[in-house]
Each structure stands twice: as structure tokens, then as C-alpha cells.
Image (cartoon, rainbow, N blue to C red; front, side):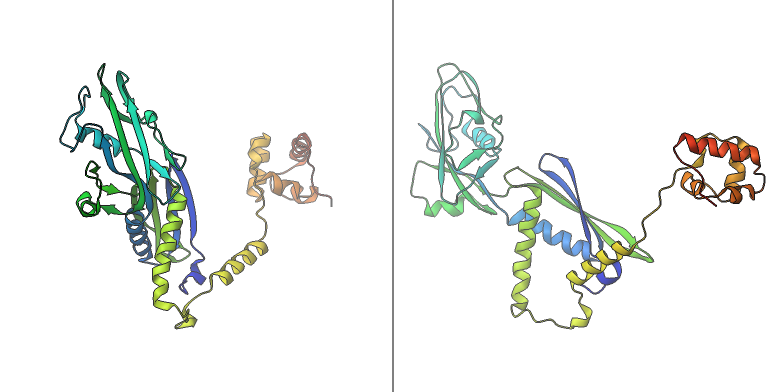
Length: 324
């Protein structure tokens, strides 16, 4: 980590849940320019390199290509495919799996009508698939694969051995949305530092937190290629994160406890008594309870009547003046 972190401290990461599988990460303080450096790298990896599962091919009984229609089905096969692409699929194994849909019910068909093996789970079972008329029948097999990135159907066409399957473009990413913003932040007199705000929205097959962890580990693995020997260059300009953390803990432990402050106005003093106390630099109940009788009577405009009023108010709170 850069030596500047010894001055500004270790960047703190805060998370804010703004919806289901939708988190905003805030990282600050960062050296100038590092917000874009980290934000852009994380965004690119999150969008392109996370593993996920999707439908890569379908077989519909009686249909040989995507430009056909199914008798009694309101949608065309192309519309059916577009609806199937909206499925959020979680797969626990790397091997290819098959899910099936066989129905002749009249009306709407949704994802909950699909039968899945144990290693496959559809996270949005209410996703609309098609509408069937009375007497119609829909029998379909769907190939589920786990992978990374985007692979067009025409690239896989040459390797396909089943002539009856309709191949789909494979978009494996479990990410719905990633965006980042950079804002200015400050530490002491340093006003040109960066604050990175990273927004991550996933399909639910992985959490935003795990997605960011995967992306950071992947980036780190590539950066390590430039220094496999783990040689420190210009070591005096690099800081040790462990030593900075220990230093911050020590400073926190040695920091004096902050005294609570309860305004004396809540005690309901008369204006004369209240003004005398405030003019004497006593603005809180905590400060008042540390005063002695002699200190109060030496205040300008503070007499015996005011002293009685103070004692009575403190007594109601279970407090008293300090002893001489």
C-alpha cells in the first residue's frame, strides 16, 4: 500500500443495502486518482469475468428452428426464447445439466412449471414463459451450462452434435448492474483525496459482497504476475498495512473518552440563574455537577436563591454538587 496511507489512514469500506442483492460500497480515503483506478478495474471484471449459469440451448418437440411457431402457443419461438433468457439460474456444479418443461395447461406458463435437477435452482419462479390455448401442448428441454463472459451461438455451432437443438447466445454473468462514481473527500488539510462509490446489483446467484471479493482476487492474481518473487522495490515508499492498522488501534485506545454533554436548559432554570451559569462557562449538567458551592457563588449574578434552585434541580435528577 502507498506510503500516503500512513498519513491519511487505511481506507474504510462501508456497505449500504439499497434493495435485494443490491449494495452500494463506499471506500475512502484514497489517494488522488485511485478512485478511478480501482473503480474502473472492478467494474470491468465484475461485468466480464464472474462465473454464472444460463440456458445455452433448447429442444422443443416438433420444432427445428427458432423462426417456427408452436401450435396453440400465443408467443412465437423467438418470444419464448427471450422470456427464457430472463431466468435467473443458480447452478452448483460445472457439468452440463438439463431442465424440462412439459405442460398442456390452459393459460400462463411460468418458471415454476419447469422441473430442475438438484444442482439447478431457478431464483425467479414467477418469470413468465408463455401462454397456451386450450388443447395446446408444450414439451421442451433446456440445456444449462456454467461459464464466464459472453459466447455467441454461432461460435458453438461447429462443435454442436445434436441437430435438433436451438442454440442460444450464452450470457453467463450473474451481474445486473455495476456503476461507480468518484467524489472528493478530505483528511485534515488534505482536500484532494478520492472517495469511491461502487454500486453492484446481482441476479441473486451470488451476493454483491462475494462478487466484489471474486473480482478483487482475480485482479490481484494478474497483478502478482509482475512480481512473482514478491520483491519490494523502493520499499521506503511503501507502507505495511498491518503496521498502519496497529498504529490506528493504539491511537484509538489512547484517545481520551469523550465526555457526554447534556445542556442545562433541560433543568428548567429561571432566566437569571441560567444566564449566570452560561456566562460562567457552565453549559452542561455534567459540568454543573462537578462544581462546588463556593465556585457557583463566586459567579457573577449567582446568589443564594440561584444556589437553592440548582441544588433542587440536580436532586430531581439524582445528582448533587461536588464536595468542597
